[in-house]
Length: 161
Image 1 (cartoon, helix red, strand yellow):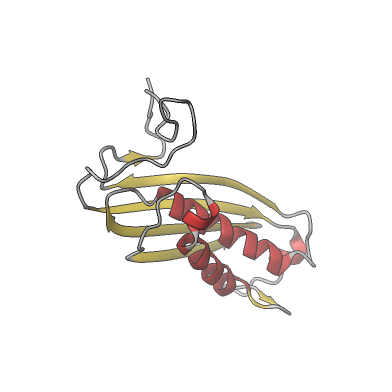
Image 2 (image 1 turned 120 degrees about the horizontal axis):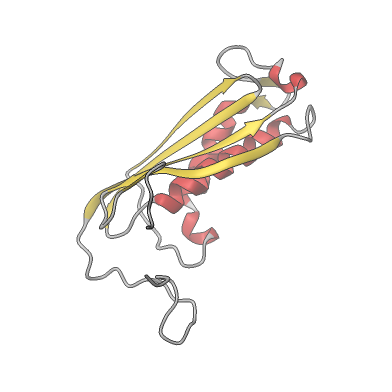
């Protein structure tokens, strides 16, 4: 198996997807943020109430914007029209869990959009709460699942022998 973004001259190159079939592609990624007790105390059961505003809602908006800008941030990503970008944000035991699911109808997958969405949402969460806890840790950024392409993936399943 070779790297898809490296050409015969060992140079970076965008993958040619012109021969691929158009299919519905879906990907889900997550990011986690561990916070201290001061931040955890701001959770009201639905969102965090800080002086900057609603943390989850701001994170969702930032994550959506990030997912839509993925090809501007990751040099060899194809620009994709997102059919959908949805978030699930939960908080339990000093840890926020952000899940981002992106969907497109196209010739290439949306895993980078889902990963970018989850990551940017986590960064926005950090920004909203950093006055209370600059020691927050963003971790566990990973792809959970992707479907619709040549090879599907689900976290926990081996992808290489």
